[in-house]
Image 1 (spheres, rainbow, N blue to C red):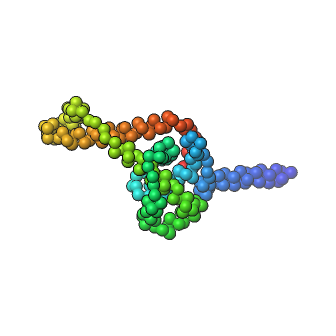
Image 2: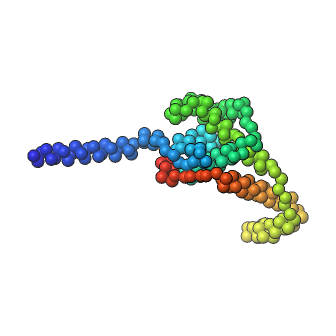
Image 3: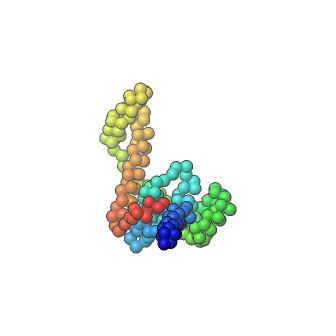
Length: 218
């Protein structure tokens, strides 16, 4: 009887250990779940991994946190969903993007990674088409001219430029010599802020849901 109880105890301990190793196995990182939704469109864990590996990071030296990655993908989804009529992307543009991707990471590596995700070249094109359309729309929005007043230039010069130069003990140039430089910088900052505000306004026009419990598996 003692041996029977010992055997049963060992048997159940073994089952629990096997279950733990199975759940903790790196192979289980392939599991998918719903990370977020933009309107009725779902964003899955696999979507984020595909965007990270094939779309956003192949040409970047910087890493993105899971939260930053999700925020970027949601921006893409929202802009394309609500402003897709503002621009068009040709098949040739998509082809060139994937051609550059293949040359950058290596065609054999690209083929293996597509196979790993069970992703066809046609499906990869759909991801890239969405990314390129987003970039075109943002570029068009960024090209809209914003005004910069003389008062804004003077305020920037007095409160930021002069203060920074004095802190670094560098030469403080007269405003007249750098007025064009300050105007260009202010215009760039205002344009960036204007585009960010526009994207945020689009987010307010659709329902966005996020599941942090799924994002933690990224």
